[in-house]
Image 1: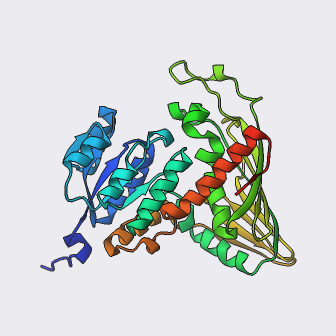
Image 2: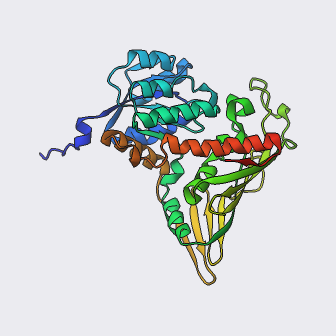
Image 3: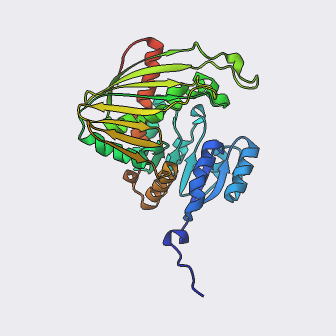
Length: 343
């Protein structure tokens, strides 16, 4: 009888803990639980039913009601996954850094830019492996787009993320979600930075004319965030991007093709969000369909970086992701003040 060869990684599984057991953490586990070289040993969530469900799903030995309790009682961890609402990042990353624990955190990492800067500085000082949930950097069609952009003379870019309102309590209030540009369309903000480098300035405006707070169940907080916004971002290399964001589209509305259109002198690119990329020249059109699960590749890259102790092996480490958050929050500042904000 032939014995299966054991992968060396399986012989020394990474021990990970999960903080926050909601939808995004379950999404991460779709990949992590198939890898074979990592095991979830503990979970934490203030909602006992979610913690228990995650413990059952992952086979974790222990569940806690808070990250504080988890950090106090768990020894021998190799990494931590963090997926909590934007305003719940209270001494989570700071404790992980203090314990020299690599961490993957979902975006937006915080709404407090001072906290974000302090976390980034501390993580860099320890040369700690960190990763932020900008998983689209791992898409095969984003790799292709980056190659195409490299030899383009780009003038303008326009794009959108238009959809509905997620029924999460913290999404209903701008103070707890940062509004859609910061919470959701930050993926395209990050993609623009990934393709074109750092921004020089941003001007943004918003409106609240389409959604009535009375549309939502009474058990949710009173909706008060932006229905839609538009941000014009000028990059240091001269590229100007116009990014539209909206959460007013209902299920019965017209289908929306979200993504980016990049217009150059002799070539243009049409990126349909996480689906395909079309490259146009005067006489040709090439289409590339995405064939990968970017979230799985994101998790795989993080765990490989943890095992290798190599922060550079991650495409969106915390210090770099902070620049995306700064840009998105600067757009919010522009909406509030009516002024151009310079980065």
